[in-house]
Length: 258
Image 1 (cartoon, rainbow, N blue to C red):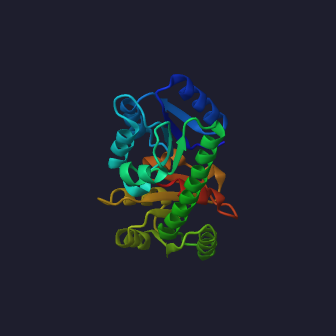
Image 2 (image 1 turned 180 degrees about the horizontal axis):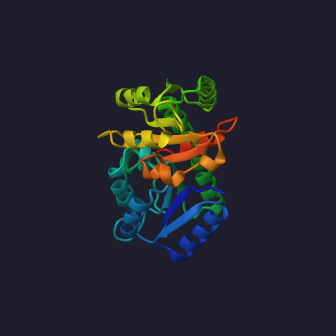
Image 3 (image 1 turned 90 degrees about the horizontal axis):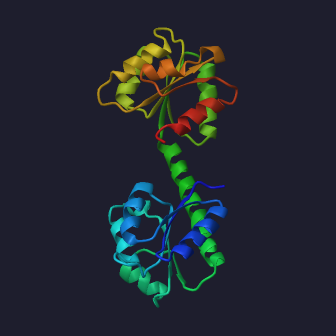
C-alpha cells in the first residue's frame, strides 16, 4: 500500500469511476474531477504526486488545466503527468508545445497501460524522495548537548550510521547556548540533566532566542522520565528515551520538519 496521491481528470463519468476503482485497487489514493475547472483547485489543495488527465475536456481543456496548475509550482514540485486522450497528438508535440507530460496514451487504451505508467512514475517518485531524504540528512545540522563523553560518542556513531554528517557537541548548558546562537542548528539534542541546567529549562532558554528556528529534543535515561507534554510546553519538539541503538532519537529527528 502506498500513500501516493493520484488525481484523475476525466469528463466521461463511467470511465472516471472505473479508473478510480482500478487505481485504488492498485494501492494508490485516488481523487477524481470531471472538469479542468474543478480539477485545478483540487490539485492546488491536494498537491497530487501523479495527475491522469484527458485533453478534450469541456470548458478548461487538459492543456489549460495542466499549464495553470504548473504555473504556480517550482520545477521540483511538478507531479508526474499522464495524458489519456482520443485527440491525435504525438508525445513530442504534447511535450514541447503544451506542457510537461511523462506519458501520452491514446484512447482507447487498456487500464493495464495506465497502471503501468502510474507504477513507473511511482518508482521515480520514490527515488526522488530517497534522494531528497539523503540530501536532507547530509545537510541537517544537529547539536548534541550532553556532559557524558561516552554518550556523545554513541549518539554520534548512531547519527552518522543513519546518514547525518553535520554534528557538533557541547558538554554543558552554557556552552550549548553559545553554540545554538552561533551555529543555529536545526536540531538540538539535550540531556535531561546537565551540570549547570536541566534539559527542560534549557529548552525554555532556546525558545526565548528571537528569530531562531530550531527543534530541541530532550533525551533521558529512563522511560519514567519521558515528558513529551512538558518538553513541548517548554518550547521543545519531543522527549525520548536513550536506547543502545538510539532508535527513538533517530525517529524523532526524522519527524522534524514533516
